[in-house]
Length: 439
Image 1 (tube, one colour):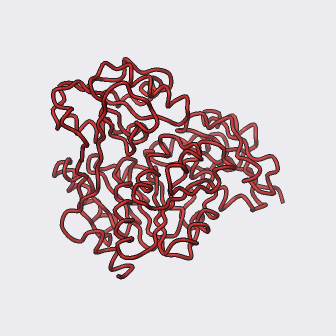
Image 2: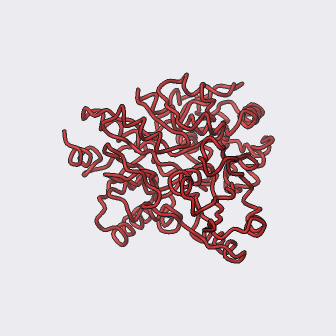
Image 3: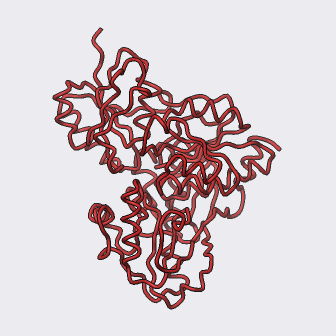
């Protein structure tokens, strides 16, 4: 029987996972290519034969997404699978139209086709948008479960930007592990906070293998879902974080709406900075589309180390990169802290940006007052360092989840801004987790 020829559209995460769990060993399909977007320098590579399996002795090539129409025709593709996240619904349908116009079917693969079943209980923490507060919610869940006496291992949504074979299964428990795997800034932002808790977190490329390793040392698995994707694992409790600073996005982005509709618990975060009408809009949307979900009200209070040196000073604010780019936020916790603590001026980094940092501003035009901490490669990290150091500021305000001073050398004083999840009223996450898992 002739194999169905498939292209998977992705961003080095969900695309590889869908291939591994659904297509890799199925002889009725032939994945002839991946296309890539969102992640710099991923195209032009190959998904390696060591991971692709016996049906793919040469691996699978990765092309720029811009070549999709030509690839469909040149490779005689019958099916295009859309496999990345944090995009508007209209964007997804534009991609569908491109596939259909060039003669291919268009697939969105759902949970039943792509989720792996664990032998241990799984709590998943996802979001409706990048930058909603999922990471601090995950940390809170890990702390509560550990206080209950559970051995907890987290597994993070993939960020495989380097050697995919070497990154197939990664375990992080120390800072040395971060160096050993040559982690980018984006990876460190997700892994370091778990290490700071004294916890273990896994990530990589092959998520069934990762799960089986994590199960060996866990009573409970916590899925730390990135990029507002839905979980790779079947969840016993699904917690989803909504963001009233982007009220309405919970019903207008893919696959955030999938998360929102399927959640057991919805955390309405940032209630300390959002207006009442926006909070109520999100709450009303919960009632409309997922009335059985438990609502947890929450804030993300800001903590600043040595914050008094901000007052009266000219500052440059560095924020989490993905939150500002495909998360579409124009500022983050660092900007809020700088304003609150009396900075005399927040200097726009735009005129001082170099290389790929300058290109980031050209692509994501909503970001102009703060600097996205882009660091997908050593070159980009050095360009970030050069940009920061060329800005005529007195103080650097670091609003990223990690202390950037670990990876870049700054020529001016810096302060670190942190934020944690703080529930408001009852029920809270401890109540919910205790009822579900006991003790």
